[in-house]
Amino acid sequence: MTSQPSPPTTAETESRWSSTAAFAAEWEQWHAAHERRRTDPHGFLAVTHLHWLGAEPSRLEGVPGIWSVQDDAVTVVLEAGESLLRDGRELNGSSAKGGTTAVVFDPIAEREGINLTAGPAVVELAKRGGEYIVRPRHPENALLNGYRGTPAYAPDPRFTVEGVYVAFESPRPTTVGAAVEGIVHVYEAPGEIRFTLDGQDLTLTAFNGHAPGTLSVLFTDATSGKTTYGANRTLTVGAPDADGRVTLDFNRAVNLPCAYTDLATCPLPPAENRLTVAVEAGEQNPHERQAGQ
Image 1 (cartoon, one colour):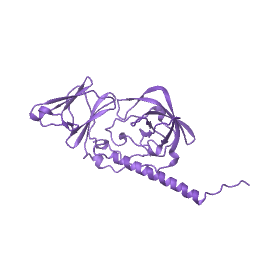
Image 2: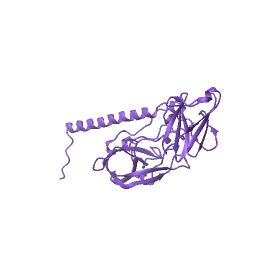
Image 3: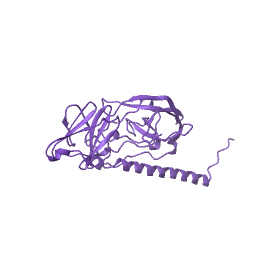
Image 4: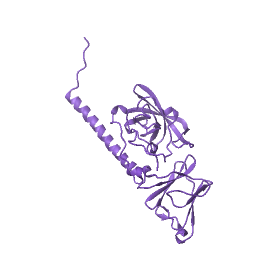
């Protein structure tokens, strides 16, 4: 007769429950903090317009001034009564006295930007896909004020997996599409992360994260377009240890701005990051995806 495994003892059951409860509590705190950042009065939910600049001087809805770009330099002409602030300093100069002021901004690096202030709004001037954009962010935007949170899968330790980071001989320029048709993003991929999930050996191309040493992966999986946003999700991975080991906690996979608004230029995952497994962890589809105003 085959012996049956012994049932867990009370102590083992209590220990497992305590560990799972602590894991869930830590995740709840993390996600609450992430939601607070998402609802910043001048965050991406506050964006009211997406303007692409050209050589022809133009007025932009929701933004003071007449804007143009030429030879990688953006110019805004402010007329009497129009004002923009940069780091608390007024840029309008003579326009306050009845004339006009032309302000020329230095070239901005790809995926970088500066924030200007116009009354209660923040005006973002940035470079995306080689083009200059202007996005006003207003704390009274309906998308922000109507936001009621993003659902997520219940935290599950099964989707916290160990992996190995393997650096490329040299960073690989990687071209990916964007949520906005007609532009592309180029990232330098320093390496890839190899791991196993649901019995499958998987690999994700990694980009550099925002914090020094960290990594960022864009991916889709078998839940994309069903319970999760179809275009992409993103996961931040801590810096590899001396042996290249990393932890991928897919419970902390989050949506990019394009899951909420059409006024975003989010990158799409590289083809090799389209996983065939179902990553039933992390953020799901927003309750109601609204197009930008």
